[in-house]
Amino acid sequence: MIVTRFAPSPNGHLHLGHAYSAIVAHDLAQAAGGRFLLRIEDIDGERSKPELAHEFRRDLEWLGLAWDEVPAQSTRIQSYRAAADRLAEMKLLYPCQCTRAEIAESASVHSPEGPIYPGTCKCASIDADKPVAWRLDVERAAERVGNLMWQDELAGEQIGNPRIFGDVILVRKALPASYHLAATLDDAADGVTLVTRGRDLFQATHIHRLLQALLELPVPRWHHHPILLDEEGKKLAKRRGSASLADLRNAGEDGSLLAEQLRSQNLPAGISLEKA
Ligand code: GLU
Image 1 (tube, rainbow, N blue to C red):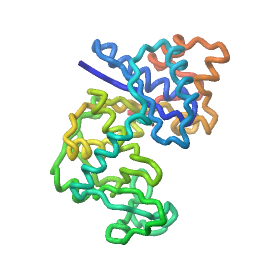
Image 2: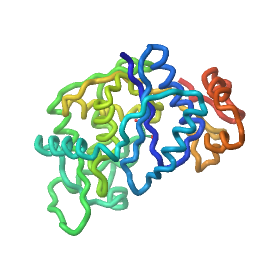
Image 3: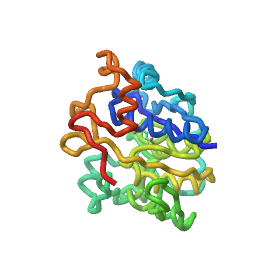
Image 4: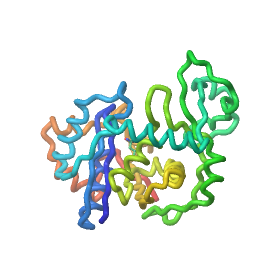
C-alpha cells in the first residue's frame, strides 16, 4: 500500500507552496488507494506553536483534503535518543561545540546548504560548560554501508552521495534530534512508502538514505515535486509576502476551488511552478 505524508513544522503559517505539497502527497495516495498522513514536526519546542498545528488542520480541511494524523515529533523523543545511542555505539557520532560563526570562519568548502563543517571538533576535548551537538562522521558511516541507491519517482534512480553536506548534525545542541534524524526515523515508524516533499529537499535524501542503511530501516521511494516560485523566481515564503492559507480562508476564499487550481497548475498571478 502507498503511504504518503505531509510534515509541516508549526513555526509559521502555511502558504500556497505548502498547499501544493499537501495536495501532491494526498492525491498520490488517493490515486493508489493508499493513506495520506499528517505529521506535525514540532521537535523544535521553542519555535513550535501548538495553535499553528490546529490552524494547519483547519487549512487542510478547507482545501478539501482528508488525512490520518500520526503522533507529533514531540512525543517521539525516546526513539530519537535510542537511534542516536545506536549510532554512538557504532562510533559514528562525535561531539561538536562550534558556533555558527566559528564554522563560517573556518570552513573552506561549501555545500548547497552552506559551509561544510571542517571537522574542527573531531579530536577536540569537550568543555563541560558549553552545549554540545552531535555530528555524524559521514566518511566513516559511508564506508560502513558502501554504495547506496535511491529512487525518485520524477528524477529516476539516484546514486547516493552522503558526503554532500559533510558531517551533518544529528543531535542539535538543545534538541534530541536534527531534522535529518527525526524525519528519517518518523517516516520509517509511520510506514511511509513514498516520501513526498519539495525538490528543495532533494539533496537531504542522500543523508536520509545513509541513515536508513545504518539504522536498518525500510527504504521508501521518494517523490520530490517542483516547488512554487514567487515573482522573483524564489521559493514562496511568508516573510516575502506570500499570503497564508489562514488569511485566504479567513477572507472567505473557496479552499476546494484553490485546490483544483493548484492541481491544474492554474496559478495565481506572479506565482509559477519550478521548471523541470
Ligand atoms: N518539517 C519539514 C518542513 O516543513 C518537512 C520536510 C519533509 O517533508 O521531509 O520543511
